[in-house]
Image 1 (tube, rainbow, N blue to C red):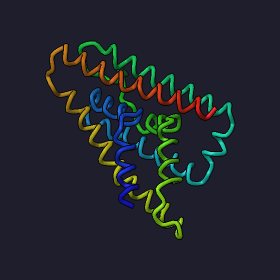
Image 2: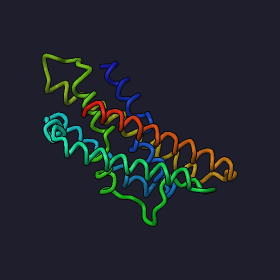
Image 3: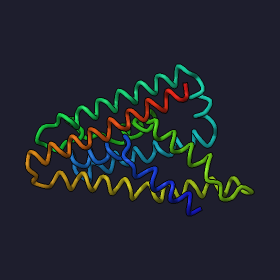
Length: 199
Protein backbone atom coordinates (compact mmCIF):
# COMPACT_ATOMS: atom_id res chain seq x y z
CA UNK A 1 0.00 0.00 0.00
CA UNK A 2 2.90 2.37 0.76
CA UNK A 3 4.43 1.60 -2.64
CA UNK A 4 1.12 2.48 -4.28
CA UNK A 5 0.90 5.76 -2.30
CA UNK A 6 4.45 6.68 -3.33
CA UNK A 7 3.65 5.94 -6.98
CA UNK A 8 0.52 8.10 -6.77
CA UNK A 9 2.52 10.97 -5.28
CA UNK A 10 5.27 10.92 -7.90
CA UNK A 11 2.96 10.36 -10.88
CA UNK A 12 0.59 13.16 -9.88
CA UNK A 13 3.11 15.77 -8.76
CA UNK A 14 5.10 15.65 -12.01
CA UNK A 15 4.14 18.43 -14.44
CA UNK A 16 1.31 17.52 -16.77
CA UNK A 17 -1.65 19.35 -18.26
CA UNK A 18 -3.63 19.23 -15.00
CA UNK A 19 -1.05 20.61 -12.59
CA UNK A 20 0.47 23.11 -15.01
CA UNK A 21 -2.91 24.51 -16.01
CA UNK A 22 -3.85 24.65 -12.31
CA UNK A 23 -0.80 26.81 -11.65
CA UNK A 24 -1.76 28.94 -14.64
CA UNK A 25 -5.29 29.53 -13.42
CA UNK A 26 -3.96 30.45 -9.99
CA UNK A 27 -1.49 32.86 -11.55
CA UNK A 28 -4.03 34.45 -13.86
CA UNK A 29 -7.11 34.59 -11.65
CA UNK A 30 -6.14 33.92 -8.05
CA UNK A 31 -6.76 31.10 -5.62
CA UNK A 32 -10.53 31.47 -5.17
CA UNK A 33 -11.34 31.44 -8.91
CA UNK A 34 -8.92 28.56 -9.38
CA UNK A 35 -10.81 26.39 -6.91
CA UNK A 36 -13.67 26.00 -9.43
CA UNK A 37 -11.23 24.81 -12.07
CA UNK A 38 -9.59 22.36 -9.63
CA UNK A 39 -13.04 21.02 -8.74
CA UNK A 40 -13.60 20.30 -12.44
CA UNK A 41 -10.22 18.56 -12.69
CA UNK A 42 -11.11 16.50 -9.60
CA UNK A 43 -14.44 15.40 -11.09
CA UNK A 44 -12.79 14.71 -14.45
CA UNK A 45 -9.99 12.68 -12.86
CA UNK A 46 -12.47 10.50 -11.00
CA UNK A 47 -14.59 10.03 -14.15
CA UNK A 48 -11.46 8.87 -15.97
CA UNK A 49 -10.65 6.55 -13.03
CA UNK A 50 -14.15 5.04 -13.20
CA UNK A 51 -13.81 4.60 -16.97
CA UNK A 52 -10.52 2.77 -16.42
CA UNK A 53 -11.87 0.63 -13.56
CA UNK A 54 -14.99 -0.43 -15.48
CA UNK A 55 -13.10 -1.09 -18.71
CA UNK A 56 -15.00 1.56 -20.65
CA UNK A 57 -11.76 3.45 -21.37
CA UNK A 58 -10.14 0.29 -22.74
CA UNK A 59 -13.10 -0.37 -25.05
CA UNK A 60 -13.35 3.23 -26.28
CA UNK A 61 -9.60 3.68 -26.68
CA UNK A 62 -9.35 0.41 -28.61
CA UNK A 63 -11.01 2.23 -31.54
CA UNK A 64 -8.06 3.72 -33.46
CA UNK A 65 -9.99 6.77 -34.72
CA UNK A 66 -11.04 7.78 -31.18
CA UNK A 67 -7.50 7.31 -29.92
CA UNK A 68 -6.16 9.49 -32.72
CA UNK A 69 -8.79 12.21 -32.13
CA UNK A 70 -8.00 12.30 -28.40
CA UNK A 71 -4.26 12.38 -29.08
CA UNK A 72 -4.60 15.21 -31.62
CA UNK A 73 -6.92 17.21 -29.33
CA UNK A 74 -4.69 16.81 -26.27
CA UNK A 75 -1.49 17.52 -28.23
CA UNK A 76 -3.02 20.64 -29.81
CA UNK A 77 -4.15 21.87 -26.40
CA UNK A 78 -0.73 21.27 -24.86
CA UNK A 79 1.03 23.03 -27.75
CA UNK A 80 -1.38 25.96 -27.45
CA UNK A 81 -0.74 26.18 -23.72
CA UNK A 82 3.06 25.95 -24.17
CA UNK A 83 2.92 28.76 -26.74
CA UNK A 84 0.88 30.94 -24.40
CA UNK A 85 3.37 30.30 -21.63
CA UNK A 86 6.44 31.03 -23.76
CA UNK A 87 5.11 34.27 -25.23
CA UNK A 88 3.32 35.65 -22.21
CA UNK A 89 5.84 38.53 -22.16
CA UNK A 90 6.69 40.18 -18.89
CA UNK A 91 3.57 38.95 -17.12
CA UNK A 92 3.49 35.52 -15.49
CA UNK A 93 0.28 34.35 -17.09
CA UNK A 94 0.46 30.68 -17.97
CA UNK A 95 -3.00 30.91 -19.51
CA UNK A 96 -4.34 34.08 -21.07
CA UNK A 97 -8.11 34.28 -21.25
CA UNK A 98 -10.74 36.88 -20.39
CA UNK A 99 -12.64 34.69 -17.94
CA UNK A 100 -11.33 32.09 -15.53
CA UNK A 101 -11.82 28.48 -16.61
CA UNK A 102 -14.47 26.82 -14.47
CA UNK A 103 -15.66 23.35 -13.53
CA UNK A 104 -16.57 22.36 -17.10
CA UNK A 105 -13.13 23.33 -18.43
CA UNK A 106 -11.47 21.13 -15.80
CA UNK A 107 -13.68 18.15 -16.63
CA UNK A 108 -13.08 18.55 -20.37
CA UNK A 109 -9.32 18.84 -19.92
CA UNK A 110 -9.20 15.52 -18.06
CA UNK A 111 -11.41 13.88 -20.71
CA UNK A 112 -8.72 14.54 -23.37
CA UNK A 113 -5.70 14.37 -21.07
CA UNK A 114 -3.58 11.33 -22.02
CA UNK A 115 -1.73 11.51 -18.69
CA UNK A 116 -5.02 11.05 -16.81
CA UNK A 117 -5.72 7.77 -18.64
CA UNK A 118 -2.13 6.52 -18.40
CA UNK A 119 -1.82 7.34 -14.70
CA UNK A 120 -5.16 5.83 -13.75
CA UNK A 121 -4.43 2.69 -15.77
CA UNK A 122 -1.11 2.39 -13.93
CA UNK A 123 -2.81 2.91 -10.56
CA UNK A 124 -5.62 0.41 -10.98
CA UNK A 125 -3.91 -2.24 -13.11
CA UNK A 126 -0.68 -2.25 -11.12
CA UNK A 127 0.51 -2.13 -7.51
CA UNK A 128 -1.70 -4.92 -6.15
CA UNK A 129 -1.83 -4.99 -2.34
CA UNK A 130 -5.06 -6.91 -1.69
CA UNK A 131 -5.33 -9.42 -4.57
CA UNK A 132 -7.86 -11.54 -2.67
CA UNK A 133 -10.27 -8.61 -2.28
CA UNK A 134 -10.41 -6.61 -5.51
CA UNK A 135 -13.33 -4.45 -4.33
CA UNK A 136 -11.46 -3.36 -1.19
CA UNK A 137 -8.27 -2.72 -3.16
CA UNK A 138 -10.07 -0.64 -5.78
CA UNK A 139 -11.90 1.47 -3.18
CA UNK A 140 -8.72 1.89 -1.14
CA UNK A 141 -6.83 3.01 -4.25
CA UNK A 142 -9.55 5.57 -5.01
CA UNK A 143 -9.38 6.96 -1.47
CA UNK A 144 -5.56 7.03 -1.39
CA UNK A 145 -5.18 8.60 -4.83
CA UNK A 146 -7.76 11.31 -4.05
CA UNK A 147 -6.19 11.98 -0.63
CA UNK A 148 -2.90 12.67 -2.42
CA UNK A 149 -4.38 14.34 -5.53
CA UNK A 150 -6.25 17.07 -3.64
CA UNK A 151 -3.34 18.64 -1.65
CA UNK A 152 -0.98 18.40 -4.64
CA UNK A 153 -3.36 20.33 -6.90
CA UNK A 154 -4.18 22.84 -4.18
CA UNK A 155 -0.42 23.30 -3.74
CA UNK A 156 0.06 24.00 -7.46
CA UNK A 157 -2.89 26.40 -7.37
CA UNK A 158 -1.40 28.19 -4.35
CA UNK A 159 2.00 28.38 -6.08
CA UNK A 160 0.44 29.97 -9.15
CA UNK A 161 -1.57 32.43 -7.05
CA UNK A 162 1.60 33.32 -5.11
CA UNK A 163 3.53 34.02 -8.33
CA UNK A 164 0.70 36.32 -9.37
CA UNK A 165 1.26 38.44 -6.26
CA UNK A 166 5.07 38.67 -6.57
CA UNK A 167 6.72 41.72 -8.07
CA UNK A 168 9.34 39.99 -10.24
CA UNK A 169 11.60 41.52 -12.87
CA UNK A 170 10.83 41.10 -16.56
CA UNK A 171 13.80 38.73 -16.92
CA UNK A 172 12.50 36.56 -14.08
CA UNK A 173 9.04 36.52 -15.65
CA UNK A 174 10.51 35.45 -18.98
CA UNK A 175 12.66 32.70 -17.46
CA UNK A 176 9.67 31.27 -15.58
CA UNK A 177 7.56 31.38 -18.74
CA UNK A 178 10.25 29.59 -20.77
CA UNK A 179 10.70 26.94 -18.07
CA UNK A 180 6.95 26.28 -17.90
CA UNK A 181 6.73 26.17 -21.71
CA UNK A 182 9.62 23.70 -21.88
CA UNK A 183 7.84 21.52 -19.32
CA UNK A 184 4.66 21.55 -21.41
CA UNK A 185 6.62 20.70 -24.59
CA UNK A 186 8.22 17.77 -22.76
CA UNK A 187 4.72 16.55 -21.87
CA UNK A 188 3.70 16.91 -25.54
CA UNK A 189 6.69 14.84 -26.69
CA UNK A 190 5.99 12.13 -24.09
CA UNK A 191 2.30 12.05 -25.09
CA UNK A 192 3.20 11.67 -28.78
CA UNK A 193 5.74 8.92 -28.04
CA UNK A 194 3.20 7.08 -25.90
CA UNK A 195 0.61 7.39 -28.67
CA UNK A 196 3.06 6.05 -31.28
CA UNK A 197 3.91 3.04 -29.08
CA UNK A 198 0.20 2.20 -28.80
CA UNK A 199 -0.38 2.47 -32.57
